[in-house]
Image (cartoon, rainbow, N blue to C red; front, side):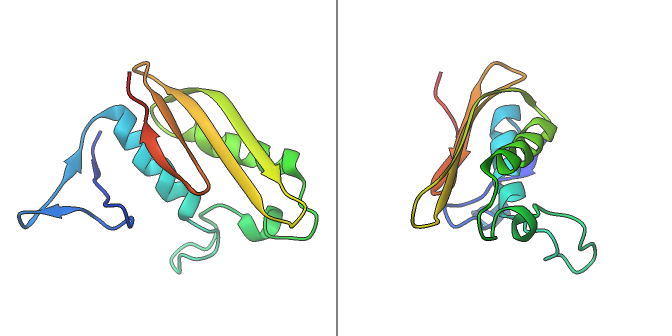
Length: 125
């Protein structure tokens, strides 16, 4: 498995005129999860069915945090290389701001973590 490396802005990383590939399974899972959570349902003109249905479940008045947690759990579990979810937290503040964070175990025993306003990383052993 291999994916293109991303820089801190989420753009494809180019070093010395070459695209940088990531082949570590845990790193690939972290990059792909970051991309999946940034992909809003309906934004891709070729297939508007793809992406996370934020407008249907998250960006609405009085969203159900249990539904959001279930949705995010499905996205994480469906990622190739993820074995199980260690923790998944979805919170909403009184000023209607939401946050989520997660930690997931990969097939090779490493831990991927990330969330809103947090980088998606592979934790050091």
